[in-house]
Amino acid sequence: MRQYRAMFALPGVRALMTVMFFARVPVTAAPMVLTLHVVEGLGRGYGAAGLVGAAATVGIAIGSPVVGRVVDRYGLRRMLVVVTVGETLFWATARFLPFPGLLACAFLGGIVMVPVMSIGRQAIAALVREELRRSAYSVDSVSVELTYMIGPAAAVALVTQVSTVAALSAMAVAVGVVGLALFAMNPRMRAADEDAEPKVPRREWLTPRMVGVLAIGAGAVFVLAGMEVTALATLRESGQLNWTGAVYAAICLASAIGGLVHGAVRRSLPQLTLMVLLSALVIPAGLIGDAWWVLALALVPSSLVCAPTVAATGEEVARLAPAGSRGEATGLQSSAFTLGAAAGAPVAGFVVDHTAPAAGFVVAGMGGLLVAAVAFALSRSRSLAPAPA
Image (cartoon, rainbow, N blue to C red; front, side):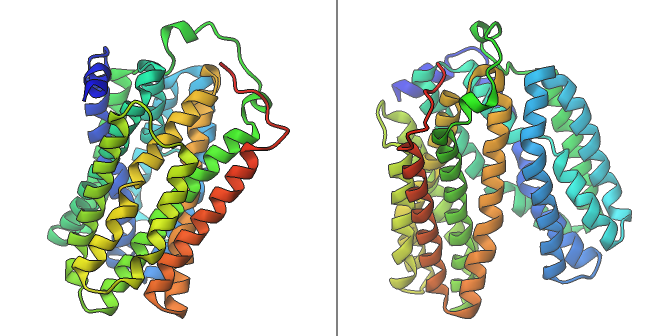
């Protein structure tokens, strides 16, 4: 716990972690609100809801590095003004849009989404010295796990107890409040001794090694998304869908414990090793049994590695990216996470639909191992440029 005490004793860290926790709740609720609005509010099917989600995902993947580059060049506050107004307008007007209009605006809304995740990771790199960043990024990953337990559940409750219009309006208010809070807080995006560092060309820091780090981030989320979809399909096939919350709670709890342990030790496993463990441990999960408690126990080993893998990705990006390009680098990391999630769920779902639920775990794990092999090859590339200090 010495690492955590030293990290939280740094100026501004406690306030940053607290604000980022609450700021992420609307981010985690957003996909569920959109899905339920399309299905319940517009009377469309889940396929149509998936199209809206895909449009928003593509927008996020495109917009994240662009928004990060704006932060690098013009500062956090100028970026926040633009994206807060843009995303708030999307949620405020979504209730009035027909399906084709919602589809187009979801793409635009994704581009101007307030980059809460990226801001948190970039601020950690600026506030926390390198020897304590593992602890900081571990707390950050655990915080994300907790918000994913709150946000979607809150969205479902608001839609079922009130209406989709109320959920959309609540999202507009929440995004506006988050933008204002971050604008007022204005966390540092660079450490004091980094302000004078010269601008480093992208080709010098976006090396094969950095690409490998981003690939592992995408692969980790691919595995997680595939694991969650397959777990849901397994429970549905065995008639135990009402135990979904318990299984997901076990997954999140195990991931949080793994993240806390990862952040407490001075030397942890490398990012690539964590990725291999995450992928390999999820493969046999569907072969042990289909009782909900057996499935939950089977997913605990891989879940213990979830938060550490995500935390290690953030730590590596912060280490390899120069301070003047950290916003763009964390934006690319967000794009990698987004694309990994966008690929993992449909790939695992397709396999489950055409074979059996157990095959979804195998495909998710094998996909992660394939990404790990590619990342290993990139790390050994002879064209690797030296990482900037």
